[in-house]
Image 1 (cartoon, rainbow, N blue to C red):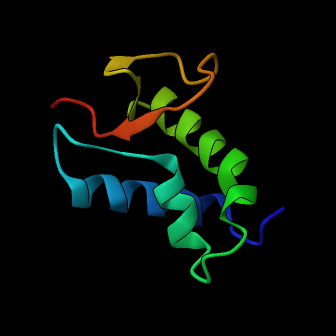
Image 2 (cartoon, rainbow, N blue to C red; image 1 turned 90 degrees about the vertical axis):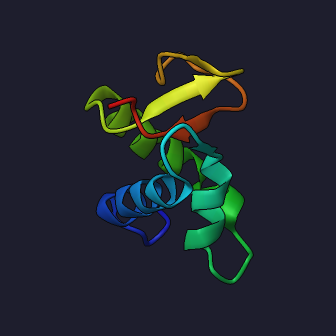
Length: 87
């Protein structure tokens, strides 16, 4: 456990996606790095960030992409990107 609540992680994902804007994406590591403000330990946050992104994607609040194509977040392996869904 990282010490960050699911709500903290969700809020950070959504804030970064909104700041990037429609049609743009973020890397989940950007969320982890933002939360681990000291610059250390961000890698340990990655499973929690991906889990939160999965929940958000299933709720339709973000899209999970690999190589520019929407993927099932639960089945995605390797690098992913997160973005706002098309409105």
